[in-house]
Image (cartoon, rainbow, N blue to C red; front, side):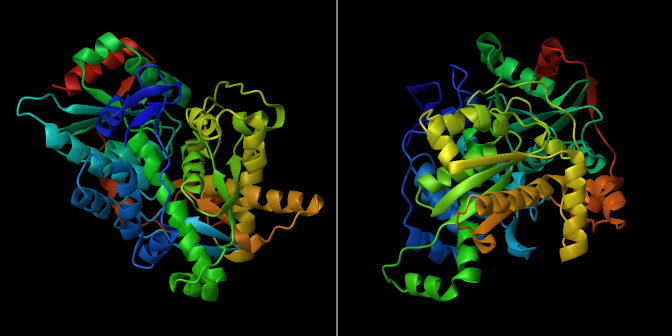
Length: 460
């Protein structure tokens, strides 16, 4: 399989080329040249074993022509050794995506990318080749997931940019306490400034001849695509919980029309939700999607007006979603062939203020005994609003057929959670130990020249 640019479907590249370039030469994002159709029966059967086994099958549909089937299985087994449980939270189900090494959904994409790219690089690496530099910008969880996903992988170094003073203390520790091949940089600016710096590097063709660099943001195909896997796993668990007998009959070979589910996705750069849209096109029975945003409401506004108008990001308590110019909007357009009406038919979008997010955190905690992070709280709010809208329009919609995604552990946002609920969230041991480690980081202004010097030094 080859991969095309969202800006030119005739611009085709291999998996390694797409992963190493990050952005296509024309500035577009890479997409698979065709969407493989899953064997849903096989997928659901593998889901009964583990998330990793099911994901290995799905990954092979895209990657088996670039690395061997055994290498795919090894990479995914190493990357996705954690659980992704579906639990009841209030009237609906939530998919907990925060049981990986850095306690955020981005562990799925970052760890998968680290393992697969590591194999692609080693397969073609010469003894004196320069290391590949992973350059990434983060508004919160991406940097920690990428740093952990690529930590100590031979032939690869990482440079993480994050806005100074605009990530949580625990998120900062996750990026600055690793060392070795990981370099963390505080940028005196916003996430959009960090993302602009990354794009400036990738769009400088002369510089990229000197520096072997790629990105691990969700703009990178290898970071983005594996996120589609957990939508299948969520669906398998939902069938087992809500339609156990039907699932049993289907697995026994009966010809049955499977029910559809709606996914509600906290959204910032729109990589997560667009990966879900890919899963639907692969054959997953999905009714539609709901994008849950914070005050950075560019996409919900687009759904209302048909006008996509990026603007500077606004700082919120759901900081990993503080994105004013979501890169993966191009992937959404590509999946829908730039058809605005088709997008509106399949996707809803709602936005919420900090005060609404805090109210949702408290409501979930008091009424259902469930503690969630600020990002996940937008998913809960959007689920409620979607149900209310359906009821108002007389549309049939069951709360039991909706899954909202919980994207990060509440432990990473204790400074928000504790004042709202009156309780400190439990901090897993893998996070607690980071708080006591020495931090290593650099500080820089928004300067492409300064970043170039850091990349040249780190890449030696």
